[in-house]
Length: 86
Image (cartoon, rainbow, N blue to C red; front, side, top):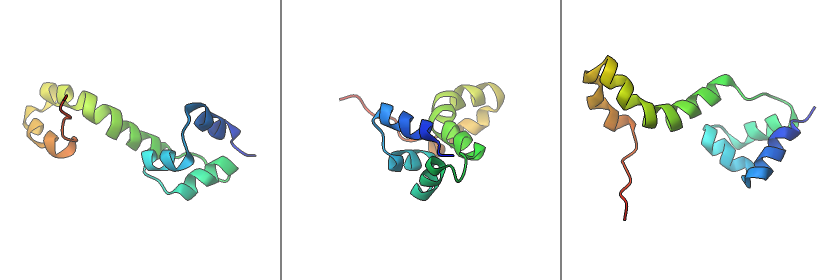
């Protein structure tokens, strides 16, 4: 059974399979396999994506401020450089 929901959702968002593969950090062939129904999206792919794009940049500073302030010194190595407004 093919996963038409994924193809339909990518189309709704105006996105390509290659973009999803890059976003999840997986090979393009994995997305093709998912769309063909040959494999499912793995939990670790979604968790890794959420951690890198949501939790780390948005929540890590507050989390470590409250729990382990010494860890704050390492955050700049993990987080992308802040963008400057022009």
